[in-house]
Amino acid sequence: MCHELKAVSFATTCLFIIININAQFRKTISLREAIDLSIKNNYQLKTDQLRIEEASAALREAIEKKLPNANVSASYLRLSSPSFDLKPNNNNNSNNAPNVSQAAYGMLNISLPIYSGKKIQYGIASSRYLMEAIKLDADADHDAVIQNTIEAFTNLYKAKFTVILFKESLEQSRQRVKDFANLEKNGLLPRNDLLKAQL
Image (cartoon, rainbow, N blue to C red; front, side):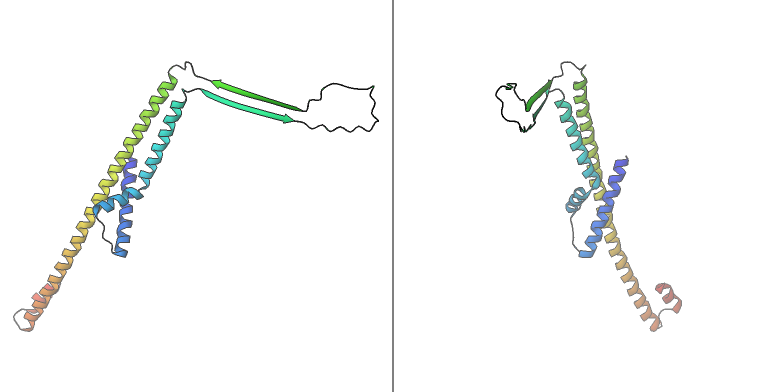
């Protein structure tokens, strides 16, 4: 309900901004264009789309949990050991031990869920239901924005024709006052009736 109110109030605000811009530039838009603009610029609908994408990513992640997981890591280490021999070469003192100055190793970890008490299956089902619920909320918000835009467009249409009717009525009243003023000048109408007509 809170989302509907936010969507409705935001759509109304967008429509009044559109009307304000319309009044400045005098561009006539159709109902279809007004609906398209409200849907395109509605903050709540954009937020709903992001929530759907987030739920879709959560569903993919839940499905991937039943697949095997593999991690590979490797490392290489090299030590430099310079040797300075300032003594004269003595062949009697020969050391044939190898000098190890580098090492390499690698690790591969593979894990596969064999049995997790249907936890993965329930997680996938839960993610699917959550995504469907978010899509239904988004559809309801979408319909509320369209309904609010139609109502605002209708109210604008009614207000436009009300202004036209008031202008026509005002023009008729002015014409009646002119007619009564002419009748009063000719002596066919008392001054009090002219004052009432002017009011």
